[in-house]
Structures are given as structure tokens and as C-alpha cells.
Length: 162
Image (cartoon, rainbow, N blue to C red; front, side, top):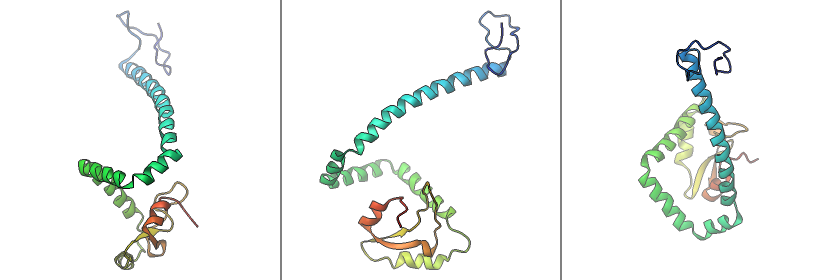
């Protein structure tokens, strides 16, 4: 009988009739490969389901619902943040870490702090070139910052707009 590990062609010298591998390494490898195959199958099914959920979320009905129930949704978000403080803190920490990695040595920290301090009421400090974007990642420097109204900044999100 030959080992069932696809990378191994050794003969099995086992005393038991249910033996499928020639060594403990091959036995672990067989189990690992079976689990990988199961995981790939699960991911295929999950992504098909997830695509449907995402399609429903982006439907025009959902946009209308969000606009009509903005206060209710904000309250739900606030409740989630209170109940999941650890997750919220984790997201904020990731953002801070990304921000710290985006600050080069030549950045003028005093000017950046001044920009944030002098931000008019109702406006956000926005990165012109986003810090985290699939196309390009900007730096946290004074010439990459601008004042943008809260509505415009939230609608811009992580996009690069010229």
C-alpha cells in the first residue's frame, strides 16, 4: 500500500490495516490537506451567500431606508459601540497605528497639530490622498490635509478624488 500524502510515494510499513501514511509527518500532512479542502469549499459557499447580502445592502430600498431612519441607525451604532467597547477600541487602535506608520520623519508635527486645532466647527480634517487606499496610500503631512464639511468628508470616505 502507498502513502496517501500526494507529495510522498513511499510504501506503508504499518502493522495496522487502517494505516494511511508512512510517517507521522505524512499523517499530519494528510489531515492538513483535507482541512484546507473543506475550508475552500466552505469559503465558496460563504462568498456566494455574502454576495447576496451585499447586493441587498446596496439596493435603492436600503438607501431610502437609511435616509428615512437616520436617527434610529445612529442610535443603533451608539448602542453597538457601548456594548462592544473592546471592538471599537481595537478599530481605533488600528487606525492610530496606520496613522503612525504614515507619519514620515520630515513631517512637521506642530503644523499638523495646528491644522487640527484650527478646524472650523462643522468641518473635518481630511486627507486629500487617503492613508489606506488600494490604489495609493498617502502620508500624514501638512500638505495632505484639508478642511472638508462633515457631510462631504463622510461621503468621500476612503476614495481618491481629484
